[in-house]
Image 1 (cartoon, rainbow, N blue to C red):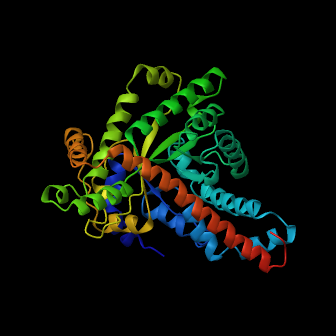
Image 2 (tube, rainbow, N blue to C red):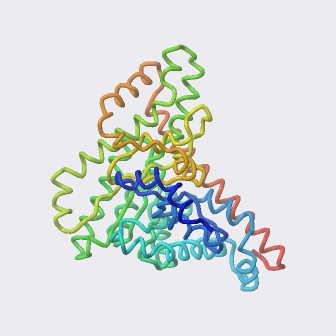
Image 3 (tube, rainbow, N blue to C red):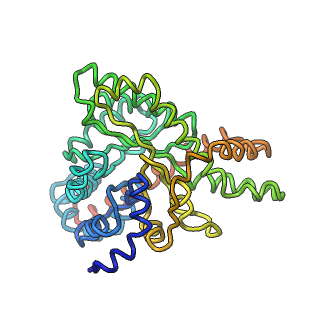
Amino acid sequence: MITVTEATATAGALKSLSDEGVSIWLDDLSRKRISTGNLAELVATKNVVGVTTNPSIFQAAIGSGEGYEEQLADLAVRGVTVDEAVRMMTTADVRAAADILHSVYDASHGADGRVSIEVDPRLAHDTVATVAEAKQLAWLVDRPNVLIKIPATQAGLPAITEVIAQGISVNVTLIFSLERYREVMAAYLAGLEQAAAKGLDLATIHSVASFFVSRVDSEIDKRLTVLGTDEALALKGKAALANARLAYEAYEEVFAGDRWSALESAGANRQRPLWASTGVKDPAYKDTLYVDELVAPGTVNTMPEATLNATADHGDIHGDTVTGGYAQARADLAAVEKLGISYDEVVGKLEDEGVAKFEVAWQELLDAVTKSLDSKGVEA
């Protein structure tokens, strides 16, 4: 049990982050985290106001089997398919987490208190199937504070518009490029316009756009290291922050335009930028780099627990670290390009790899659940 004194000691940087207008979400979920009260404790003591999940997170949680034994046994007795078993377990976890966060959802008028669940990553390049899956997930979870995650692939863009148009709140995931981010925002606005035409209450529709951070540095730093010149090495650790800061600049532009103004007057909510992949991959960098240096109002930072704890312990929150850095951000990305590293090629590769990694994690989860169901003597 965390004491009041301990909670106060660890909350300093996290409270400062929240005070700057950054919503802190936890990038993890498991049955154990729910049943032990850990998630509720993080909400109470560490300013956590939302949860994100992805196929890799569920693969780790359910693949361990911990906390899922009874439900797996029941599912085996019923003879369900492995796909149905996975969906029943993942939506049960998201529903329980949404209930824990419901008071936050109410207090924030729907902006926070959100729990995200992703469509089957194998559908990432199928618009129609993604829309159908999103509707099914929203129905299964059956909580107003769920966000359905849709990847920002080419096929995902029209799916985002259609799902928003049906009044379902969306977390757009796997965004790496500035061009694709602008397309995501346009897809959101188009969905709101269609929802308004149907007479839906726009105030009930929320969205975040998950812009991935650390993977950009991982890929570009690798190429800078191969080049090995002083000029190249001096640019390591700069591309991801530059990319994210220019994404926020794009966000400011889009949500200050005439198209947005008309929707805002009808009660619509901005699609907030969400910094994802904020755990530092290179141990040479400060472990709170992608928190300290991406502070801007109206954003979300979803953190693995290690990053959350590091921020609580030694985060350096010193005001807005985004909006004054646009010129330097452009210069940093231009310098990388000048060295022959193609921005477009890098972000395209990262999007393809992101989808593929989630597909692999999902298949590993299906395989683990199949094995569990088979061990109970029932065909998966």
